[in-house]
Image 1 (cartoon, helix red, strand yellow):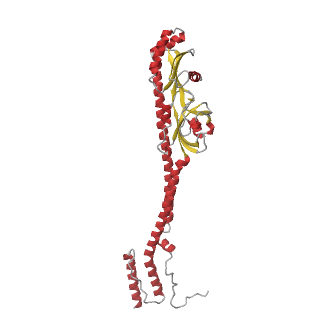
Image 2: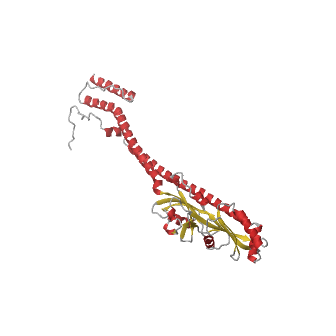
Image 3: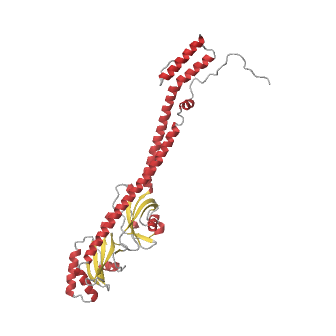
Length: 390
């Protein structure tokens, strides 16, 4: 085989572009991935910030629900304790027992009624009170006049239960009421001889539950009562949407209530607002009103759109910041690349010219960003070129 030999003569080195390519400069300096790194880091930060905002919203809704649930339970416990004290008054227990036995005289009844009027006149939140004996005969009553006698009697006969309980709320005019009941026992043998029924003006409860939030992301609270296993109603009239009060709603139609019924205790879920189509995030807690089968549920909910508005604002702000940061990185990288690479490319051009026979070619001595390294390299090249000429 014939061996190929190179043609004798002076080799020619192809010249390069006079102006360095920016992409090559960035690659040379290792800056081509900075923009991608900034974008990845910023995206991760944006996702984490959105998660933290949603977690913060959930904790806020849950904490408010817990506080209002505790306030509601404390209010009910206080009323229950007052009722227990009143039902344990010896004079009341004695007179109710006599009414059950048919031995109550007119004089005793008058004394008892005066005592009832005096006691309950100081309870401003109590609208009406009725004592009935074991035969369901009305013995003593107290009524501040807000509810008519017919309404009071008809409502109190809706449910006859022994023990403390809360019935489904009712409304007369613009005021919401709900009923409490407590047994009265014989002073001799401690057997049930009657009960005390109370109509309670829920204005105090409504102020506790329906307190306007300091901000939209704190949510609005509502208090619902289960009518049975499939339907519920509202205990107090919500000021934000009063039209949903006084109606019965299906549990299966509202996941917020359905989740609370299914799991009990406390929880957090997303569903549809009662009586509307907007999506809400809801923190719920079961309210211990008594040992009844169908408890109350306190729900603190806020619109998904309002909660996510903060995430959208954060995303837009971060996207703007990412764009500005990328531009800044590119500008700074390009500036540094040109300042660092131009002397090196100038030195390369001199080397090419020297290799092509231009023995007068010398590297320019300019102070760059790092003058020591580049200047030393230029001096060394010029010294080498001078030696070649000699």
